[in-house]
Image 1: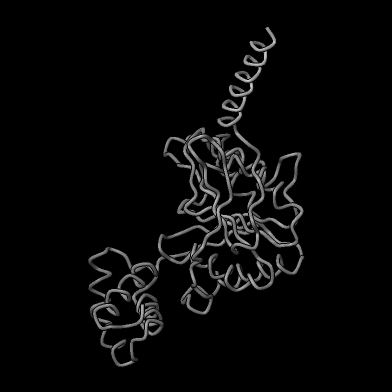
Image 2: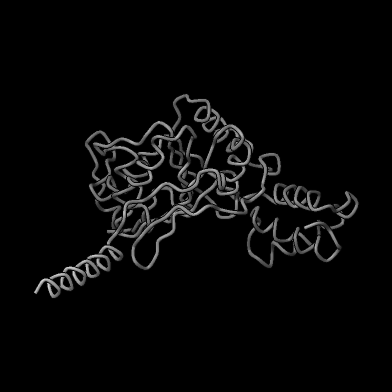
Length: 292
């Protein structure tokens, strides 16, 4: 009888172990010495972990051209944060390929020696933001939670999680954590023509948005600092091309000779963005033996 009971207990323990293996587990702290950047990864079991980024993009602030006003705002805010002063969560919005995410990566490289760290989180995993806050709270470093190309559709869970962390949750974010997000949408949610019908007009001519519009604006308003990016002019685009060609080892004379091809490249791509300039420079330098 005792033998059967022991066997039953052993089976029960095995079953419990299997159940625990598939249940969500609290986010655990990684080896913070492994990198200056981490990425939140979710497994098929739902377990999340902070995995070190082994090869961090080496871009520097000095390499980013024609976005000086935006650079100044982001650098000032990050400097305040690293120094332990008050700083804001940041929303970078505007034209694609104009350097929004590159600027954040460059700030990481600039301030990592002074204790800045970065955690990249996909929008689908923003529901884990409270766990990230708990994990980094006791650390001496300063952490930027980076959400790239952020936008939401109606009803997505990450929307409410982000909104609560930014402002409105009983549990506040810790002083050593800020959120930097990039988006092509100013208000992070799709906007429809029919929503304009919800605006109301007062007798003195004032216009007030309806509840649907107010809800969409409310998330972006919780970011303390908005930084807008705009499409580049032809001259700005060529200046960026010249910067990247020079950084890839192309002599000044060849940089000047590349202007016509750079314009054709942009025309074929339908964009004069910084990303297109970088891609052209890599192609040009690669064909001429430049350093990659």
